[in-house]
Length: 430
Image 1 (cartoon, rainbow, N blue to C red):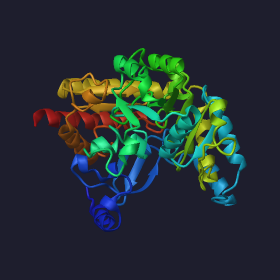
Image 2 (cartoon, one colour):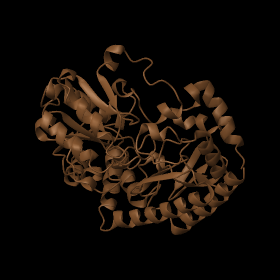
Image 3 (cartoon, rainbow, N blue to C red):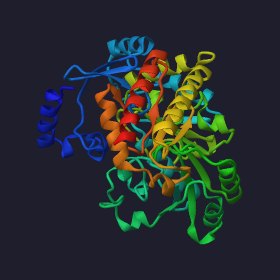
Image 4 (cartoon, rainbow, N blue to C red):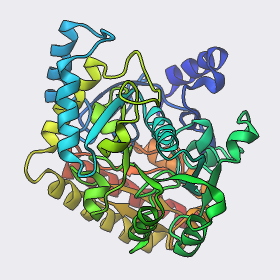
């Protein structure tokens, strides 16, 4: 595979951009190679600047659930583009998308659009603190909620991928107000939340962890969390930036039938354009300016192009049977992938939630941050590089998910399994 243009661009990028990338995990350091520079995408495929073609399982880290350049999304964005790119004023499109989000998510009565998942989560915890008058937030080891100061304690995603400490540059006064506890551990959860000295404002959680690799909740864990927070008057925030409109049209909260107080969204609701949102109970959302005293603002919030992309995407997702079809396809693919791993690389665990999955190179089970960290990152790096050479584009990190999209055909998945078997056999013989 030729990479002349990508290598040249990366060399120039490193002179202009820290690390040569605008988001750390893209640098591919943990998998022992340099990044490819992508020129275009269509359907299930992406194409780099050297003309190489790949079946895409990154899907822009989740939002391309319909595949790239879905016709309905492109048409809606082009229509909005003809009217202008940004006004810094209310538009009909943001009202339309807000209505769709509120209708889809059982717990959301009002929603505020922002520009990224990080903006959504940082705004949600500010709101929770303003609503409760308390300071401490509880998060879970290995869960990633964006790069805001409060969230970098024992964070997932690029923080663990690159093996860097999570809090340089973050004042101790902020760090001391964040407590991170083990995911899926009910005993520590209850002990922590019942500690009256902690002054807890909120608990934020990925209902399905997806930034230490995909780690579903153990039976009863989310129910216990909801019961405790409701009893103790603690705001429960679901970070559904990845799971929202991915696990079902109503997100993880619909899937598990658990209603949080606040929900954070991103990715899919913008159809691949920059977007985020947070929403929840009217009484809590009423504290946000200009209704209330908790300030949050953004010049590009509710951008008409992002709203148009989101509207077209959600309309397609709402079609009858969409999620059943996607989940069946992902389940079949995951089962065949697991069978190949068992045959050739038995010290492998595959975790799946709906149409997102992670292949951990460890015997497992993988149920929390500690067990995820037992995965063999060097083995994953070898797997990543070999799969890339075979035309399969995966996340350049052991601790991310692989996304199945509606655009991936049976032939795409069969081709992927064929190449996976070839790489697994090579791994077994090495």
